[in-house]
Length: 208
Image (tube, rainbow, N blue to C red):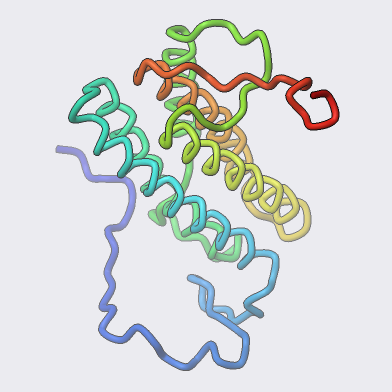
C-alpha cells in the first residue's frame, strides 16, 4: 500500500481552555499570533461553520437513508466533504510561506470529484423552469443553508487570496462546492419523491 500523501494528526488535546486567547489574539498553525477578527481567522472560521452545517445535513441524510437507501451515497459524499473542509481549514490557518509539504490541503482532485458528482446527480434531475426555494424536505433546506454559508466562505477566500496571498485553489473548491450543494439539495428531494418549491413572484403579499 502506498504512503498516504498527508501527515496524520499528532495532537494531545488534554486541556480545552488555555487563556492564551483572552487578549483577543489566536495562534495560526504556523505559529504566528494574530487578532481573532483578522480576515484569515474570519475565513477559516467560516469554513468551520460550513463544516458544522454539512455535518448536520450528513446526519439527516444518514437518518433518512434507512427508508431511502439512495441517500446513503449522499451521506458518504457529505462526510468526505467534511474531511476536505478540515483540510482546507488547515491551509487557511497557515501563512502561505509556512505551508509544509505533507500538510493536508485541497487539490485539483477534490474539485474534479465534485464536478463528477454534480454531473451525475444533475443528469437524474428535471430541467429547471424557475428558481427554486429552500424547502420541500428538511434535508433540502439544510443543504441550502450549507450552500449559502459556502458562498460566504468563498467571498472571504477571494478577499484573502487577493490581500494575503492565500492559495486560489481554495476559492475554486468553495465555488464548486456551492454548486454541488445546490445540486445535492435538488437531488435529495428527487430521491425522497418530494416536489421542489419553485419561486412564484406573484405569491408575494403585494400580488395577492
